[in-house]
Length: 183
Image (cartoon, rainbow, N blue to C red; front, side, top):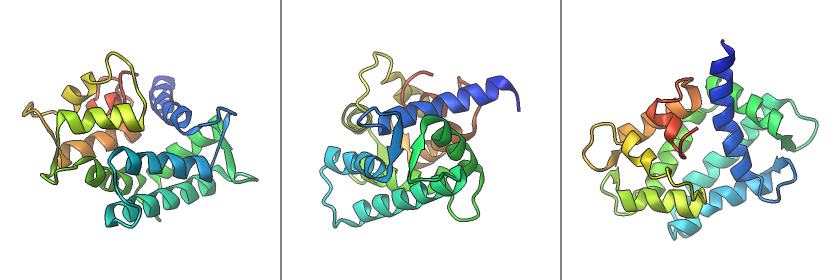
């Protein structure tokens, strides 16, 4: 694997870590991971007992346990370096959980507020603004990148493919590499 490959993928996971590290202490624990998942519920006004909320929270907990397992950490907190390395390992190890798809389906079901099996520009803007708290001027450019067929919405298939690319693609121009704005 080339250095460039590691840098692009690591940059994506490092960006995810930064979004999770709410207290900015350089470590992430389950409480922060869970709080981030709950931002989806708050942003889309989903009750905690809704099946979509339960699916996201269960998937998030399983993902967190996989990160701890792959980090081989001595505690229940991960540094950025541990998080990035564990995220890379967990993405490739599907023996217990397919991180690249399980979470993607649960997230898609929340974002698709109107249930039309597609994410509109407004639904995606809410993701960037209220969940990822992204104010980057190019953030909405990611919508056009993810809408690979150009029909003005992101289908479930386009979303899942982009989520896979986010986890696996070393190409900084791949649609999934723009998931949360330009790398």
